[in-house]
Image (tube, rainbow, N blue to C red; front, side, top):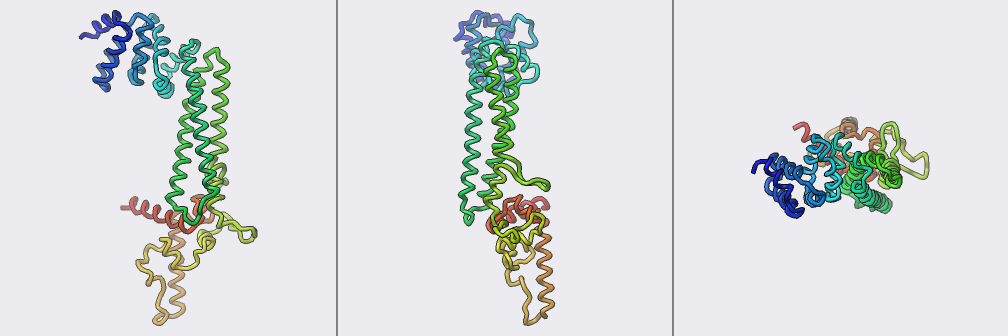
Length: 350
């Protein structure tokens, strides 16, 4: 059927029939540009609020955005349909629109902000945002709690990476959450609802505190860790601390000193950690004193130690601070880190 004819016919459809037509179009060719044109034609032909509300209930995000874009292009006579469309839209679709709307589409939402349908969606969004944020903060606090009771002896580098990945994922999602929240605030400021603005601002403040205080920042060359990263370091890097200040290692001391704090003293220990990859078997870790002089044996060990230091530097572990930054406070964690970094470096150079 011709698109103009579709628009003409849709005005006579019952609300239920109009919704059925749009739903059928969506499901038959969801990625077809022509489908979008046909849905827009049906929508522009609707003449009653009941029809628009019914269609809104079955609309997905993609075609809703197309409709809003089409309405922006039309004259004022079709703008009444936006309020009715918002009544029908599911909260999931509204949330997606709030996330992805262009400046022009945001302007449409802001224009609708004085009307109850949009305010209702904002109210539901406030409830959802508050719940989501509380759940994320609870998850972060659970990670902190788990760290304070961690079994260092059996805590692997894989365990560490999984926890850090969880933290980084929460951080990235909070950034996304904040961006969406600010868009909601941008709409709310155009309402006559100071209660909505106040609640969104409180969620915004709580989210910023979660980012800055609960998650915090990792150790850097110029600053100490804060938040959950500080908890990671305190829980996993106890080996570098001592009740005797003279035995507490400073951050700028050499990585080989960190090895000593981990009770790794011998060339064999370094080899077991993967810090002497050039040595293929244990027998090559020292020269035979029966056939080599003391000086030759000492020079050979010095050569191996030089290789250890070079490998530490290549792995980003030149100082005790580097060990802390990577949370490598046990031999088990160090071994896993070396294996992972070595594999990564091998892949990069191959």
